[in-house]
Image (tube, rainbow, N blue to C red):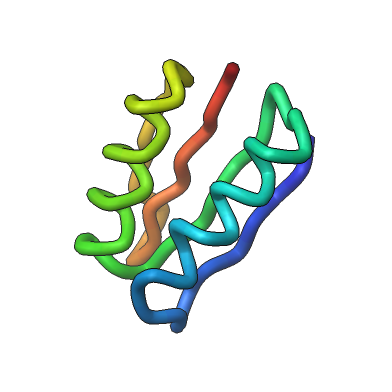
Length: 68
């Protein structure tokens, strides 16, 4: 499973990295974010691309497991 680490990055970079994974036809990947705003924007984008996802909180990070 591909992991995209966007901790410490400001928007729109986390969403752009997620878009790149979708464009590369990645079906299963996870995104690690430390920002609630970035997480919400990533989830909005994943919904628009009809990906399903599960979000878990691990310490101070959000881990988004996406499946397309």
